[in-house]
Length: 27
Image (cartoon, rainbow, N blue to C red; front, side, top):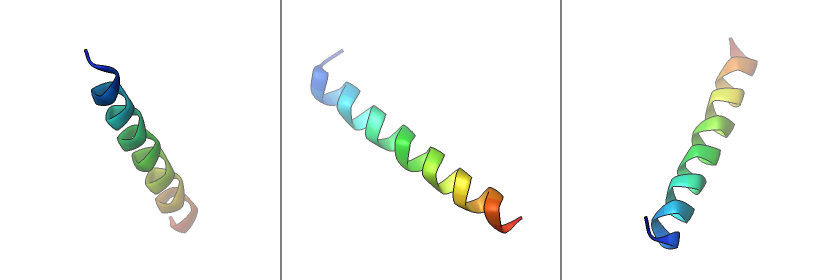
């Protein structure tokens, strides 16, 4: 795996985690 791909994946995961956290706060 290229470092760039890994970086993109990490960013996407962080974004998802952040969104999930926000959603959980509203529920």
